[in-house]
Length: 173
Image (cartoon, rainbow, N blue to C red; front, side, top):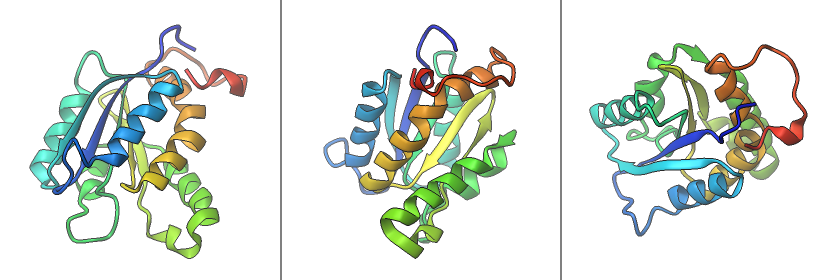
């Protein structure tokens, strides 16, 4: 594992959230920092295709960013466009991320978990994870999935590791 914690840019996709009402984004940053990650930036992005694409690509291309974690825009409502805009940009998809999120979410919300389109992949050598916008979903995704895997994923994408196993206690950053 690299000696420095991954540097993460976070984004909230919403037409209605403000810095004062962005509970999901605030929780996302708190949980990542508590786990030892470095949150280098946060922004709130309007849910139109060009704004979403520009924000994600801008963060993924930044020299001081190892991963981008996005909350919001992953549902099935008409304004939820994150998957349609971002998934085509993935150089590699991490199918297990969405599968695991829905499996864990099932324990909390039952069959409604199938409505989640949480997904992750790699864009421009950066791990990009798209999480639902609810605070419960953010907490679940960060604590159960990102904290145990993100450091290792960032190292693999950067070519810092082969495919050997790590002690699970080392994955938190």
